[in-house]
Length: 90
Image (tube, rainbow, N blue to C red; front, side, top):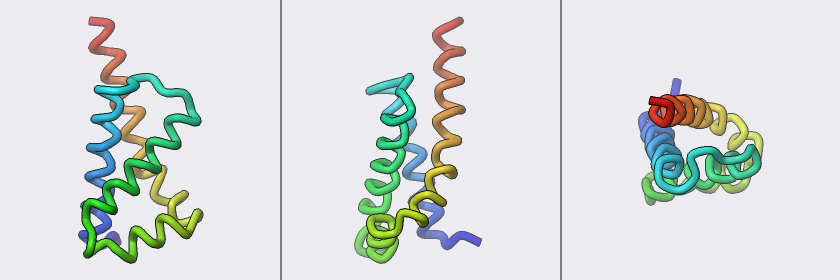
């Protein structure tokens, strides 16, 4: 079960990714996608400081922990890109 703070961080990371896709790069390549997912997660965690201090440190230092969080946020990208393609097509 996720702690409420971690849940809020992941939710904010979704918002960060969606904003990036809508306003900066709607169809990123895989390397860029991974990079801005990580940046979005870290930015979301930093936005919740000082309460999220230990989470920020763990995200920065523990690659395995970050690798477990990334898939939770990356599903948002697939949905947003699909929606953007649909909007462009109509």
